[in-house]
Length: 357
Ligand SMILES: Cc1cc2nc3c(=O)[nH]c(=O)nc-3n(C[C@H](O)[C@H](O)[C@H](O)COP(=O)(O)O)c2cc1C
Ligand code: SF4
Ligand code: SF4
Image (cartoon, rainbow, N blue to C red; front, top):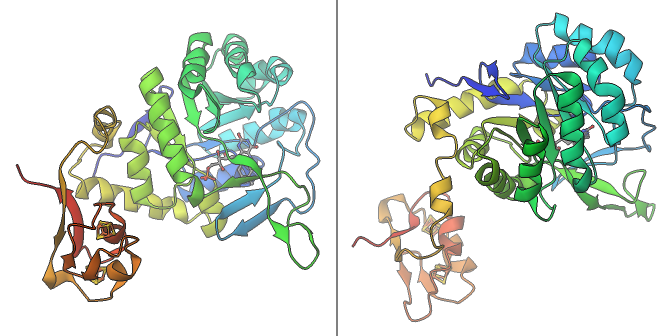
């Protein structure tokens, strides 16, 4: 068994996987359910001065991931402060109160949600220019650790994360869902959801989130709550290797249910052990030094193992340069070592590996 313990902005966690802000943390009962299902901590649905009136419908699961046009919480701040946060705390959950999306919301709510019993705050904004000030306002008013939540597509991401830290945030959550996005209901010839501007989350986000986590960790030195597209223990390990000190999930438990916390924890344990780590914290940022090396500077070659090959033909069919006539044979004058054939080999028979010196 791997030692999975870690911290989020100084708060000890039994393991790294927490529930990110969204529908599954919509009130105190829901937070208690996520805690009982094994979430190491729970970020509330974003609490705002005005309860949201969400378009209908506002949620759909598509092939690419979850599409939503939710705003912040539709439960009013008073109820969060007097009922939902205290109820969530009674269950024993570690509660991170998400507040936003404006500076005014943070000024109005930071102290009150802290007094209600939250363990930490997360500030979230649609406007990157406001996030550093929101971080400072939250830290000054609440006297609690503050996370600032960033978006993968913001320009100057590393600089914004650093400014949030300088203003008082103790860590960064990377990333929020991405948008604006759109799907069309073909029969009705109108947007699939109740708004033409939606947000995308789930598996499609993972590569963008990984890059953002690495950029933020490099800029700030952590901690980073690595969130976006995590669907398996392997994804979670990638997030940790890229600099995530903990891992947030929202779409996975939406799609697969709260049991996914237990399976994700078990998968992460197995993946860390397979990668040679007995202590999860030792894996944090372990891939970052390699990000600083010149890409593609190593000499590579394709290696084929006859014993593992099922002769499925995928590698031959997919080569864009017609360089592969048989699974075990490539025409070196045509092969660009692009890696596509190895990436579709499911058995591990075809690998792109570094040439031995
Ligand atoms: C339906 C839905 C509602 C969300 N609501 C919020 C929210 O109120 N506040 C917030 O900061 N993030 C919100 N998020 C973003 C998630 O917390 C998370 O950052 C994002 O979905 C990426 O993680 P995932 O791919 O694991 O879902 C929401 C996401 C979804 C899918
Ligand atoms: S994709 Fe892999 S298993 Fe399939 S033919 Fe090519 S080498 Fe063999
Ligand atoms: S590495 Fe690229 S170019 Fe070479 S055989 Fe494979 S798919 Fe073709």
